[in-house]
Length: 267
Image (cartoon, rainbow, N blue to C red; front, side, top):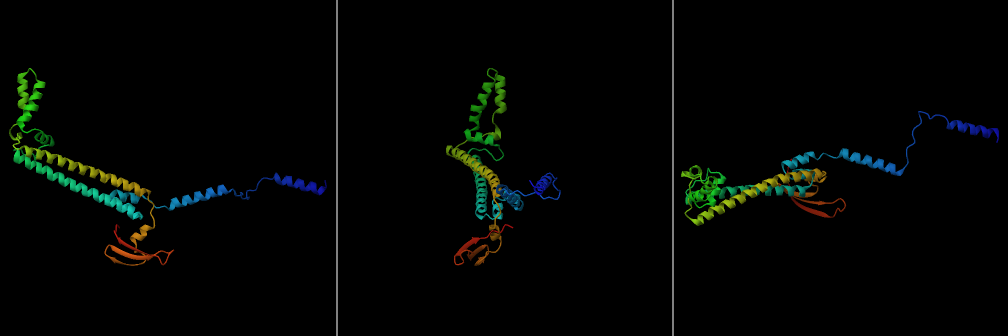
């Protein structure tokens, strides 16, 4: 081996054992999978950082179902919740009104045909008037039986219990017409059903608000919101809230679209 070759090998070995310099830059990784993962993570982070908050739309939906979806640009979803909420409110109002009218009609019937004023009575007393044809029948079938079961053989306590729990004076009634008695009971049942519908509809109002809030939390605001709140591109006419427009798409300039809409301003 020549002297020049030996010197070259020695210098290469010496260079391999030298410590790395602090100014040497690290060599980037060129693995495709690693680069793609880093790029995807960066895009996801950028998208999440630029994504608008859905909390305002959730709050809007809790106040008025459908408001949050309309604000996010989802017209059909928002209108569906608004229509459902209006139908539930109408059910509450109509059912509560029916229940009130029918229960007051039953009071009038009892006043005229049984001689008892039920306006200031509790529901338990009204049930007694519905279940027994007279207060004497109630005293005989309920009070006396209870006294006999509690104080059998003790005549003094038996009499005292009957005197203490029997219906007297203004608490007495007597149905003189069987048909009117049946009519009173029918009015009571109809009133109870109406109030039950009102309670179910009121519960539906709460469920509708939570459902609208959940849906709004899943909706990402889109550009349709701008088209709903800003003037529509294209030619057309507007009569108050009614808007008729004719517009062409950018891809097909000769393909015209007609749209008749009712604009609902929410802001």
